[in-house]
Length: 173
Image (cartoon, rainbow, N blue to C red; front, side):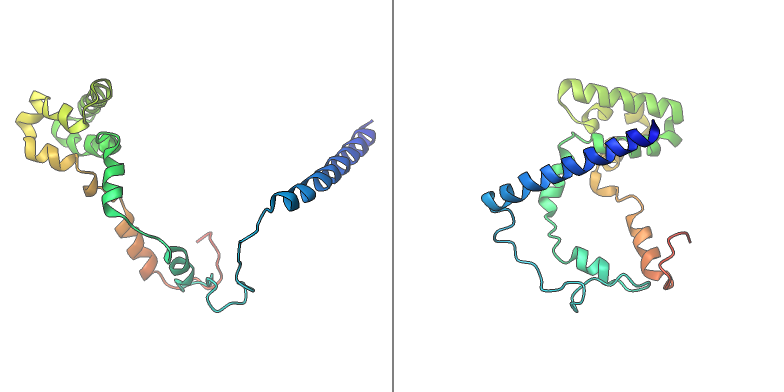
């Protein structure tokens, strides 16, 4: 029984694959799929191909070479959520002041209110009397600034740059 099911599955696979080729290739030719795309002659042997050898940063340079950074657009994108993108970091930073559970409750309520009213996290936190008394408007504004939060990016970048060459490409280290 099992060998019959396996045989039928193999036949089904072959028939469906053949039909896909018979329909797909003429359709690709008809619609001109890939026309106008120019590929490098042999990128694998090209001098500009990324290097994956340990210690070399060629691959990273290759990947980032076409990256365009639009700081104003990035700033607008981070403000689309009304500051909610920094809620976890704000909660972490006010936990020493209010206590962890209370900080969670305050930030959660501020996020909920910001969503319901169409305002920002900062606006809601500025309306919180206890937080205003303990931190003040300037500090709340600093905590809600997305530009302040780059996470561990700088530290991780330094670690990668300063790491010794691995040579073998063994990712288990």
